Length: 311
Image (cartoon, rainbow, N blue to C red):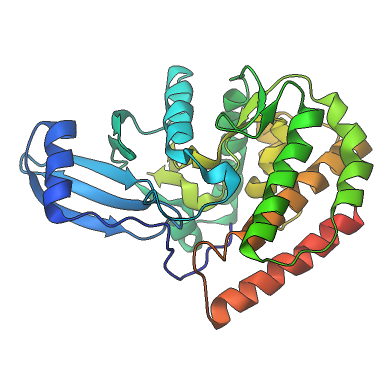
C-alpha cells in the first residue's frame, strides 16, 4: 500500500499522564517510557514500556469532532472484533489486552514490518513469505459474518446489495468533502452481476499490504491493523495484497486459488475501483496537503481510470 508521509488530522495525541493511566489499566504497572509509532495514517499509536519491562502497543481512535468517511465510524470496534475473531481461529495477531473508550491496547510484536525488511530479503525469501501469507489469508477467510459489508455499516443481506452501498457511501463522502470524481456508477452497475457469485460473507482484512505484516527470524510473526475489515468477497483482499500490481502467483498458490475467471477479474476490478475512491477522498478530511500528496492523488486517479476501463 502506498503511504503518504504527512500527518493526519485523524490522529489523537495523548499526554504522558494519559498514557501512564492506560498502561496501569492494561499492564497493571506504571509507564516507564513511550514512543509514538508514526507509520499508521488513521489512528495514533504508541509503544508503551512498563516499569517491569513489559511492552504493549496502544492505538487511539480519532477525536470525536474530526470529520470521517462513512465507513470509518467505529473503526476501532471493528478492529477489536477482527483481532478477536482471528485470534480465536489461531491466526497470528496481537492479543487484545484492553479495549475501551476509543482505546485499544495489544501485545507488542517483536519483529518488524515486512516493508521495512524488504530490501534485506532475497527474491526466494519474498516468494516463500507470499505463499505463507496466502495460506494465512485463506484461513482468515474461513471466518464468516452475519451480514455483508462493514460491521458498523454500510451492510446488507447480500453482497450484490452491500458492495454498491459501500461505493455510494464513498461517493456521498466525496460530495460532502467537495472532492470531484469521475462518474463511476455506470461501471459499477455493469460489473454488479458478477457480485451474485459471492454467497458467504467472509472476513476480509482489506489493508493487507506488507506494512501490516510483521516478520521475525524470516517468518511471518503477525498481522496487524484490521481496522478496515469487512465481511464480503475474499477476492476483495487482492485489492490491497496486490495493490496497484499484477496478481501475485506465489500468494495465489499459497492461498490455493486456481484459475481466475472473467467474472472474478471483474470483481477484482470493482474492488480496486472502490479502494481508489477511498484513497482519493480520504485526503481531504485527513488534511493531506503539499506536493507529495498531489503526486499520490494523481497516481490514484490514474489507477482509477485504468480499473474503470476494465469494467
